[in-house]
Image 1 (cartoon, rainbow, N blue to C red):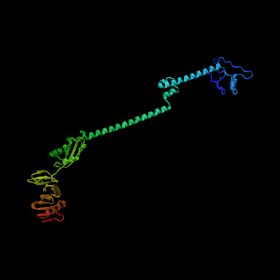
Image 2: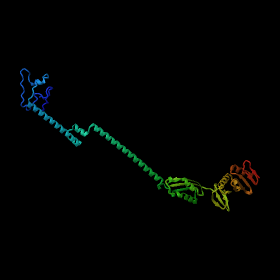
Image 3: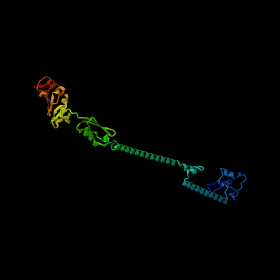
Image 4: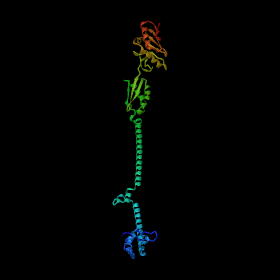
Length: 367
C-alpha cells in the first residue's frame, strides 16, 4: 500500500493539515465530504492546492474522524519503521557477532557490510598488513640471529676439533719406528745412544715437539759434534748428525787417546795413527781451546814439516814442538799459522840448527 505523505503544518495553526484530497484513498476518507465549489471560483480543490498564491487558511479542513484516522496511521507507520530499524540493527549485531566465513558470505549476493566482513575496512587492512610485516621482520631477525649463532658454534666446534686433533690426539704423535738417523754410517753404538736420547719424546704430537730440546739431548752423546732435527710428518723425525772426527793423538799413559778439535776423546789406540798430530794438552777448561789451536796449526802445515814433528806441546798459553834429531821449534801463540808454517819449513830445510823460533815470523831466529 502506498503511504500517504505527511500533512503540512501551517504557520498559523498547530493542527495538522491533509495534503490534498486526491492523495487520500477512499478507505481512509470515510465520513469526509468534499465541500462544494462555488460557481465561478475555479476548477477544483486541486487548483486551489496547487496554486502558490492560495492562502493556507483557504484550504478545506478535514473532519475530526478523518484527522484521527490519518494520525493513527502515521503513528502506526512510524512505529513500524522504528521496529524495522531495531530489527535491522539487531540483525547486523548478530551477524557481526557470528562473523560468518567468507565461504558462507560468497554463497549469497554481497552487500557493502558483507564485503567489509570478508575484506575488512581499509584501516583494518593497513593495520593487518603492517602487523604482518612486523611479524615477518621479527621472524627474519630471529632466523638471522639463530643462523649466526649456529655458524659461530659450528666454527668453534671445528676449531676445537682441529686443535685437539693436531696438538693432543695420537694422530701426529711421534713414532720411534719412524725416526731416521743420518751421518753415523755403521756406528750402531752411537745410533743406539741417539735413539735413547730421543726416547723421552716418544708419543708427543709433532706440533708440540720442541726440536731444540731434542738437539740438546742428542748433543750430549759423546761422538755427536753437530745435530739437526727436523719433523717428518705425520709421525716421524729426521736426525742429521755430524760425528766427531779425531785429529789429535794425545798421549795417555801407554796408549793414545784420539781427540777431535774440541778436546773430546773419540776413541783410543795403542799407537798414534799416521796423519794425526801427536799432542800433549792441558787439563781443565783450557783443554778444548788448546785442542782447537793445535788442530788449526796442524791443518796449516805441509807434509814436509809434519814429517819432522814428533810431539806438539800446548801449555795453555804458547805452543812448542819437538822435531826429529832432538831439535825444537818455538811456535808461540796460535796466530799467523800459515805464515809461520812456511817460514819454519824454509828454516828447517835450509839451516842446520837445534832451535828454531818463528813466534815472530817476520823476524825468525835460529840457534
